[in-house]
Image 1 (cartoon, helix red, strand yellow):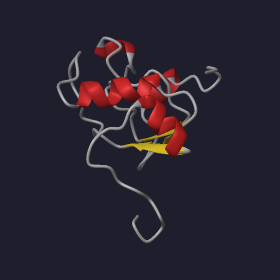
Image 2 (tube, rainbow, N blue to C red):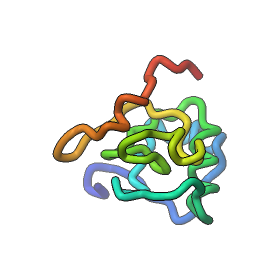
Image 3 (cartoon, rainbow, N blue to C red):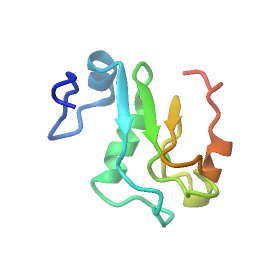
Length: 106
């Protein structure tokens, strides 16, 4: 990733800083085995910040962070990412992909 020019951060910048600095954010916080209805710190703040972004595109790997692999965001109490611009499925698409609405405008 470093050789390709991808940058990494040690702390989550503000939503405004994300929008001003990054064109794409790769969401790979959790794997497909995420369970629960709430995100714990520091992940709740990270996902909250990503939900506030408007310009940066969010690309989730396999399952958007905080989503149920089968039922999507609603099954986790709407704790996960509210918006996903693209989903990259590893191995095979998961059932939660049915719940991604890329027509949502910012």
